[in-house]
Length: 307
Ligand SMILES: Nc1ncnc2c1ncn2[C@@H]1O[C@H](COP(=O)(O)OP(=O)(O)OP(=O)(O)O)[C@@H](O)[C@H]1O
Ligand SMILES: [Mg+2]
Image 1 (cartoon, rainbow, N blue to C red):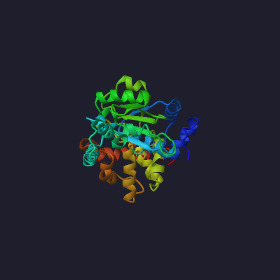
Image 2 (tube, rainbow, N blue to C red):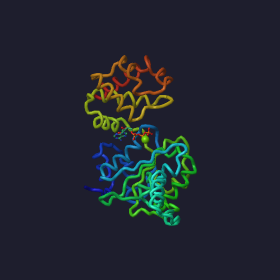
Image 3 (cartoon, rainbow, N blue to C red):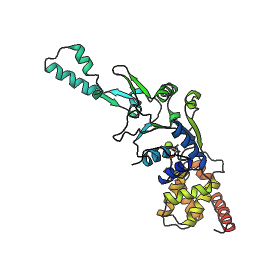
Image 4 (spheres, rainbow, N blue to C red):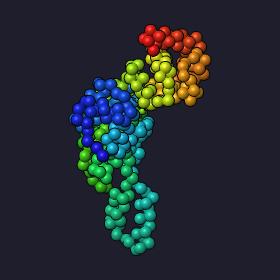
């Protein structure tokens, strides 16, 4: 089992490919540097472009546990770092009472031992697994939390240590690999960004998107895959409320394959547009003549390119 970080950019690209993740060289370069320099990687980008997947693939290919902190508004220390197990502490107190234990001070110390501690993701991320490997810590959708939590995180990411008043300071023997993602619904504070390496995950170009489809939807016919990619690439030039990401490309190709389609037809597009566009306004804009027009262009381009 190899938990060592890749030795160069090519090895990083290979590692991602081994996990079925098709990255371009610029992403592999930033990821390699983040791993090499031991810095968190901050990934921003539109929805469904493969931000979260990078952390999952890293954990799988480097045989490390994935510790995921899903952020949301109101996320607090009790859900993100640790919490005392009150129920177990109460039982301990009752048992002590029943056995005639009356030394309050000792009891007070006894119920704040680590066995009564419920470890949440940030604390779990400071521990190594049975093989001595530090986990991959995914702090997902950081833009959903509030600034107070961001400030707390800043401290954790600087020192990889957490202080629990009743126990003391817990320090990571080996810092975890940290991936932070944001959908940019708000700007993340500069202080936090400064501690990370930054990468904007963009929509893939046609070639990379086709490579992703070949891996993720192997049952999809080659011509259909090309048409799907051509269609979606053109769709991303439209002014839509929500453009389709890679997740939607995969979904659409899967849906069409399930329907035993081998080429795109206007009627099929109209009937399956819900796999691609998730807002009624967007669907209305594209459905019908516009979809047929895009398809014609895609076919013309493919004919000209010899496909
Ligand atoms: N480069 C890639 N190679 C292979 N699969 C990819 C790639 N990028 C994205 N995917 C696939 O697309 C899907 C969506 O990716 P992911 O969930 O990582 O997106 P995201 O950017 O985190 O989106 P969101 O902001 O909505 O959370 C996943 O199923 C993932 O496997
Ligand atoms: Mg995500």
